[in-house]
Structure formats: structure tokens, C-alpha cells
Length: 111
Image 1 (cartoon, one colour):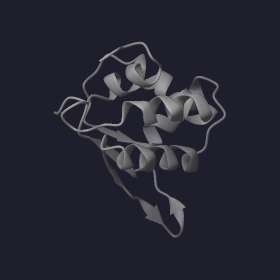
Image 2 (image 1 turned 60 degrees about the vertical axis):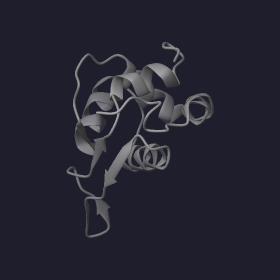
Image 3 (image 1 turned 90 degrees about the vertical axis):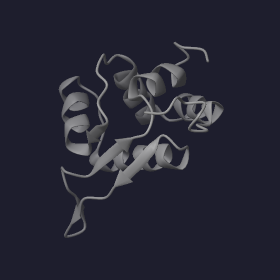
Image 4 (image 1 turned 45 degrees about the horizontal axis):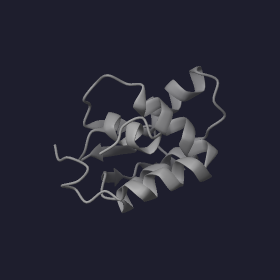
């Protein structure tokens, strides 16, 4: 797994997304609070975690978030569409630590 610096992740863009998008803020805060080193996050599992925590978020919101992270070199979004709807198996393959992405975006960790 690469560091945020070696993967050329745009830290300022992560922080801008965090400040400007309330749905992304939920996700970043969830990532920052984790303690695991998972390399794959499914849309379905993240949706379940956030929904159980009481956040108002949709599968579509999570997919849009993952696509933004892909554009920032954090990893790769793998589509899981079936009949035009997001499948639970749609997923994000992390190239960098998901915890570090969350902590840097929420300004809990400086590089």
C-alpha cells in the first residue's frame, strides 16, 4: 500500500470535499474512526455502517464519493450496477490507507 504522498493524493482536494459536502463528511469521519487496514470497501457495507449510525446517506452518495476518491488517486472504484441500480458489491479498492484518507481529510493528521 502506498503513502498518500507517493500516490500523489491531492490533500487539499480531500479537505475541500470534506468541508463542502455533508455526505462526504459522514464518510470521511467514519473512515477516520476505523482501526483496520482493509484494502476493499463495498458500497453495501459502508451504507450499512452509516445507516446504522443514523446518517441520511444513499448508495448513490457513496458511489459519487468513491468516484471522487478515484480521481484523487486514492484507489479504484469498481462498478456493481445491475439493471441500472447500484449493487451491494460495488466497491472501492484502496491504494492508500482508508484511515489516513479519513484523518487527513478531517484534519486530524498532518503530513
